[in-house]
Length: 67
Image (tube, rainbow, N blue to C red; front, side):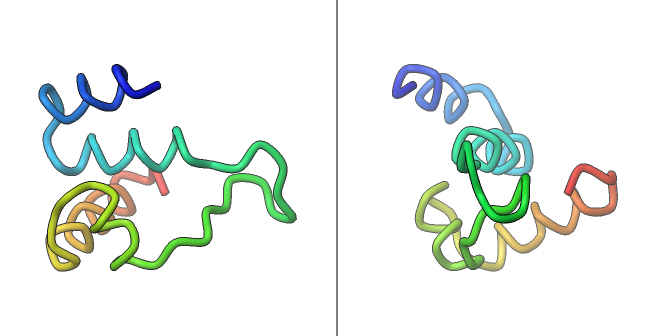
């Protein structure tokens, strides 16, 4: 999994990397399927970007109907 994340960091733009990280961290079993309980600040730390940049990436993913 670590090698996959490193490859994603090198090859993907922030929006795609954010989507990839979200998918890889979805809990296998949760109360609501497909829900990850992270706020934007926590996600920003995980992807190594600012909260504002992550917010923009999330907005793009939302506009594309991916989240």
